Length: 387
Image 1 (cartoon, helix red, strand yellow):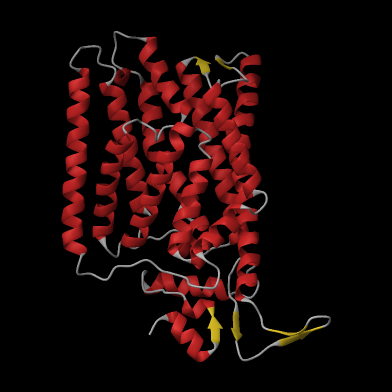
Image 2 (cartoon, one colour; image 1 turned 60 degrees about the vertical axis):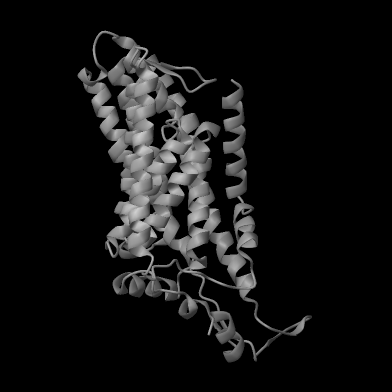
């Protein structure tokens, strides 16, 4: 019997007990329920009622309690916090970085910028230090704010048990296919692409791998930023959103990550990579999966960037062979994982209510300041595309 049928028959609504916890391990489920049942938790969707009962309100008479209204109230609170975190990220990434660089330039540090574009120029080490500092600040500030507000237990915030290793292999196979489909190194931000161009241009006779700054930035961007980004989007933000079903959490965290790139050339790729990472995390049970997905994607992007440095006529052939090899590897891995898992009942948690999935997503997007920051990101992307 389906949950909807059971609910109709029993006339009892308890959204915490009705949630499908079978997708994760017992330790995670226990902590998740405990967090949701905490009486002082303002961000828990813990509505319960009996359809045979009603309450009396002056001026309105007897009315039934409404689960949809309770759901909207909690979604509003959640995305108010997420919107504020997005604003902190965006301000750091677009405004604070420019004033920081201008201040450093004034006091004699060899790093400079233009307020009307994202270009950074000057000494290679100075550029790396500034970009690394700003990247860490924008992620940590937003992540700490979200963690302080939501207060999700660590065991729930960071899934850490690899229940199904095949989920990791499936996600990596999917990202290899996406790498080829996207066909451009879109995982990197505009600043990342520019810094690689900078390293290639300062000494055309020496390999970029001979430059310590390049190596430092590469390791930081591929490994450290992949870890920090996933702790941000697949941590407390994801855990709080999945109260309304895994599909809702995947879509909203991926959309948030895509908007914060504020670059049209990156948004589609970031959304897909985030969605694959989220799906892989739920299937495998470990946050290591989305981290691995991001690392693989960025390594692919770096490999393309290095291949394209080759000035010979063979560059296009080498690039084509590389992309074909990646695609075939992804397709082979996905087929193997599919055949291995087709008899296993590995599923995602679903929350069903009178509020449709599309309506729930639209309502969340329209919450202020989430909607305002999202519009700013899109406007910023439009300006960047035009200029």
